[in-house]
Length: 76
Image (cartoon, rainbow, N blue to C red; front, side, top):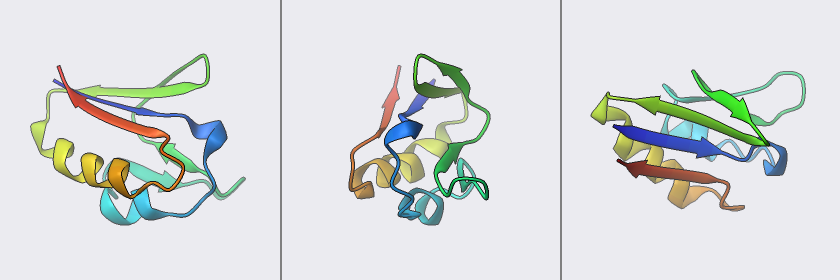
């Protein structure tokens, strides 16, 4: 299982995550911050859990590119 977490409130809207993992992230038209698609919100963290292993590499690249380090990607 792949688990991706986003701390959306700290997002600066750089758009790297959308460029690297467009299937998992998009930018909000309301506030210009990243949205983690198909995620659940709890205590400031947006978490997506999936058995689709193909999302790991793009999300890991998004994590590494994020200048404010608010994305985590792991296999569990």
